[in-house]
Image (cartoon, rainbow, N blue to C red; front, top):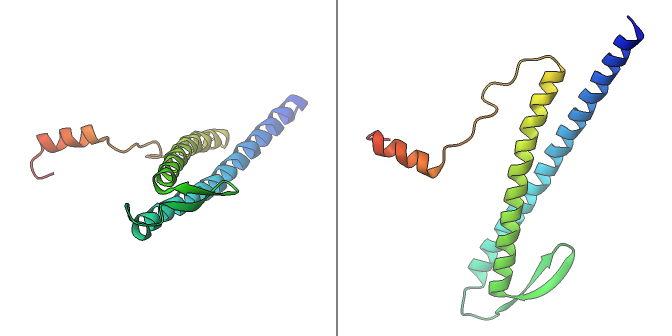
Length: 137
């Protein structure tokens, strides 16, 4: 094997390891974001059940990052919902990046692309169109 062939092989192996490390890091970040999403969902549910609107207390203690802050009930709910939206956006962004990385990894390993890995769910308008054209769906 010539030196250039060995260099190419090493470059491919290094790139494969780099992509694999990024895939694993994304998986770990997805787990952390999902835990954050679930904690936020639980906090919203707890506030709605235990502190109904119009009843005392109207100020609640919530954590924002590493700070403990006393907020009005409505402001606390708005902050939690905003956090929920940003977490969902981060999760979707990472899932899209994950699909690209897995495709890149399979290319580097000279394997066939995964079938069905790039599927996306139907939108509400697409589902409505199907339902209007297919009775019983």
